[in-house]
Image (cartoon, rainbow, N blue to C red; front, side, top):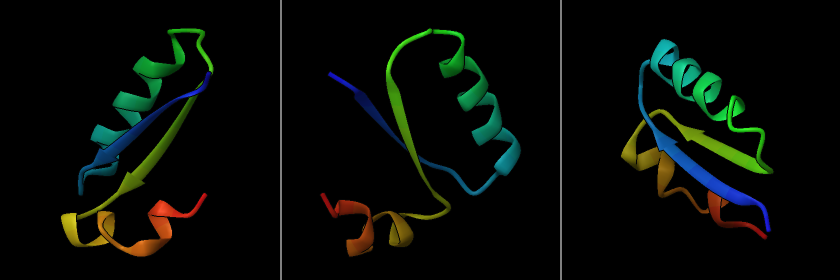
Length: 48
């Protein structure tokens, strides 16, 4: 089963650091990124 990480951060460098760390895990991962809480709660993030 694919694990899904939802990152909310307005700093692209911080997000890249997180993505780099996750990529070292060699696991089946999906990462969704939002720059703000408002963006994170937008309906497009919850489509299946």
